[in-house]
View 1 (cartoon, one colour):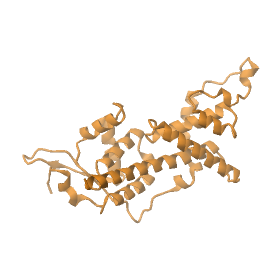
View 2: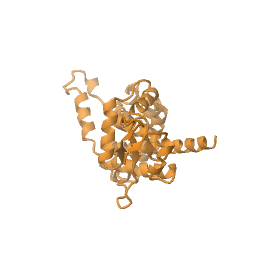
View 3: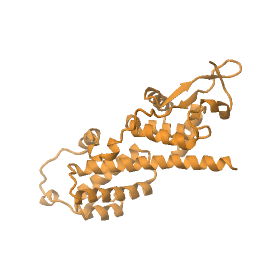
View 4: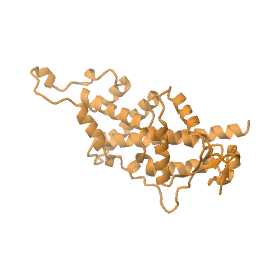
Amino acid sequence: MTIKSGKIEAFAEFSKFKDLKEFNTHMEQWMLLHRADFAKGELVGLKRLVRFSAKVPGVCNAKIGTMLKAIHEEYNENGISRSTFKRKIQKAIKFGIMEVRETERKNGSQSSNLYVFNRFPSNEPPKGGKMNHPETINLSILENQKSKERPVECQLENPVDQQQLDHTFANDKVPQPFVSLVKYFFNDAKTIEEYWRMTRIAAYRNCLEERMDTVLEIALHAFRQLIGKMKAKTNVKRPIAYYYGILEAKFLEVYFQDLREIEIGAGEAAFQ
């Protein structure tokens, strides 16, 4: 069936959700299952597409150029490319998150696509393993990055350079509140810097690097949670990996909170 282009309200029949709240709930489930399959730029594009699908829950007919422009404005002209946006769409189709339908104008020429999000299948519950057991997070890629950044170790002539340096030697780029907390448990500059480096990686992965106040607040909470687990004699084999897993879970909660704010904003707009 040929779909004629028009205002978004004309596509309400394609929505598979009774309201925005239900749409957000299903998106949360999709993200729990497939979030790790998307690169950072692709997640940025997906998040923007979800925002454009708020007026008619789960349906969007905005042009790619319009969405890319909104992303560029949000990230101070540091947005994503059209190819990244399209790659994100192909992945979402592959995973069953959405489907794309072509629309045409009255003269028969092709118009912007219609993006229709699918419901999360009820017979396939979200896999929460990564959320419940953060110590199992696979950090092989991060470890490879770490090894590339680390210079070749050599025997230093100065004995002072071989000693463990306390928190006062931590890089100035590490926020002082973070240093003040971590030093009580790991009073080592390199360890403190490594925990903060993992924080920044997780923040970047979740498109939160511009919201450092939020990142710091979550990092402090995540580290306290890690220490609580360790003091409870929980078998935490790799503390920094466990910490990274906590960060991922909490940053995902921020994403869901953003979705809920979209829902509230759409509700307020409806009464204006």
